[in-house]
Image (tube, rainbow, N blue to C red):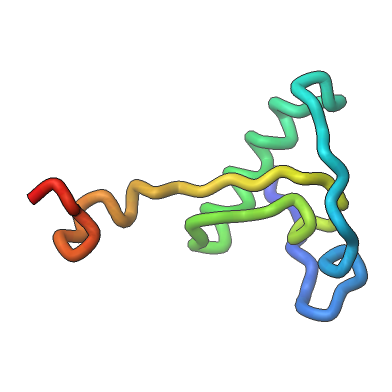
Length: 75
């Protein structure tokens, strides 16, 4: 499910996130929804406060950078 992303200036973005555990309610569903939301917005990362949740959770998709030769230190 695609979640609404809050806009700059929203109070949710000013709150300090609360740590969560792996037992957080519906965590897998939340993470799945965050992936859907991020990709729908053509993003590469999303934090829970950006969807109005004051918790410490974020995700990043590094795949778009994996073939960037300027970022590949192995060569």
